[in-house]
Length: 286
Length: 285
Image (spheres, chains in turn purple, cyan):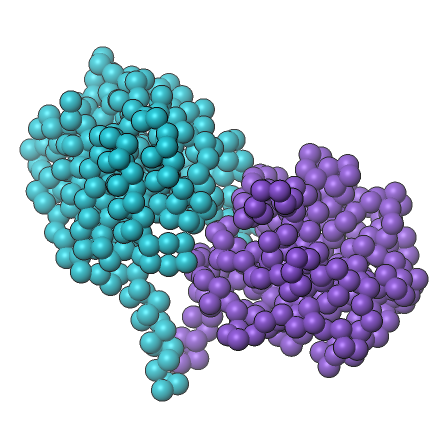
């Protein structure tokens, strides 16, 4: 009986409606702050992402490769000769990379990435379970959908967005605007097209004089949105209400890329400048 | 202790929504009267372009006294399903039947709108609720939705007043601030507001209104605010303080307003019990 009730509570606490109006005190681990995680990692990273198992992947600008950080803190080079400004891991462990003006793909276990799309300049990537990947191309105000077979489709033609995340049930695409004014939502259609755009979330803006942006975004299991902004990581509940703002790990610099990783995906990683920071969160990441 | 933890959490989850001192009882005007003509309710689904991809339920109440010759007043309820529920806390259609029959409010067409949902493309998944975005955002988008989509639809079917004083908005919680926001943005369209436990807090920046009211030339809006001293106090703000702050600002700016504070929580019990009196005040000549 107790087990059943516990399961019920877990279920209701991770659905869209019941995750509403949660304050930061119920999200953050008391007395835990950001920690710099570079003791055994030479800095100089351009982007981070995690896989479904909680492994963290880092795009190294120094070695022009992709490193994998396992749960024991060790790193191994998993893709060589692939400088990347954005990356996303698919459900098979393959890695999509935005490299220069091209999109590359490295299958799981393959250290060599192959070019799948030439001439597509993306700054953010986000995968779907079916093996498809969205790419944000702000210079042409577009979002693309593609897969490793090189098939690509422009699914949005009017918005300069620089970060992407997909809801746990893959019904909604979140896209952070380059100007920091909005996190758009789109309905994901069965074929991957995106429709029903609206300015669903309005991130808190910096004080006058500073510019805003949403360069990084990730979700937790309850579809709370963690948006890296110039004010800090802003956390929104699944209905788009602000839960609060996490302080910047290295003020005044702010995170450009964030991801949940580690055991149970309960550690939030943030790339600030070229250094990696982390902190425990009470709710696991997606 | 561990044995009881799930039970305690379970009870806490639900009790937190209901615990308050509000033991209000509905009065005679909230009860169906066999001698009172009963209005008709038409149910439909509305697909919006202003809120792209959303669908919502819309109920239109037409009083028995409506004959189409004289323009009827119009009142639009947010979270309309709960207001129209004849066994709920408000029973607005029953109250309309009774007050219109007694000529204590004008012949009024009621529009009961639920918030939008963006249905998932995969039928197995739940759609995305658009309620907080539509209701809590202090912008003109909801007013535009009413102006461009709902009013034309109603006016196509019914002869209703087109003056702002002949149109009222009502809502509970986020629907309360939504009603105020729409009238604030478009006082040329909506001249009356009825707010129950209105969320004039910082959910999406709606706590700015007291300051804005004080420093904006008075708008032609009549406002009835209701709240309870046991209303919410959470990350977004303190509801009773926020409503008192609204009332103080409305008083400062010399608005035609009433603020009634009971001892209830975040629900419609008190607001439902005083709905007849609220409507009499709101629709008085």
